[in-house]
Image (cartoon, rainbow, N blue to C red; front, side, top):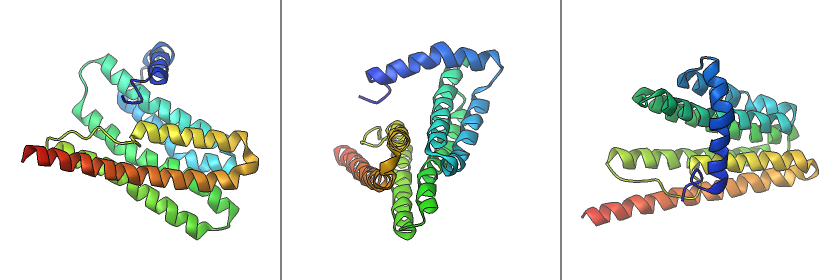
Length: 207
């Protein structure tokens, strides 16, 4: 079951439909405008974290809400635009990068172990991109690849929880940063393996 189909996911989307969707519709927003608004929030995440973890958390939340709302608005407006789907998927990679950069900024501000932290973040970005690339490659070949632990929605929720913990227990910020990036990297790398095996099994079945 996907995160969206879970009880918290259904509750979240019901709230968006009842509160956020009417708000943006009444102000004349198009799905693409909402998408770009989410991108702006995401680009501001590193700046938010440089001021305080709370602002980083808030900006990730706003970007996530915009990312969800643009799809709801597109469905409410009629048939999905193929370009809109393509644009949203492309900008997701940019948003994910800036989300992760926000946490890296906290390491940079601390000034210790920055090289080691940068290597972990680089590997996390690589794993995150591979998760998306494997899915795109599989779907281009006509295969299914909606599987794996760290789907994009799970990654966003993970970073929201990570940022929330940094806000509520600031005294353990250094430990939370190291644990957070290490678990994120391992979970993403595990998902890469899951998707490769999943695609390989489909090829074997076809043969």
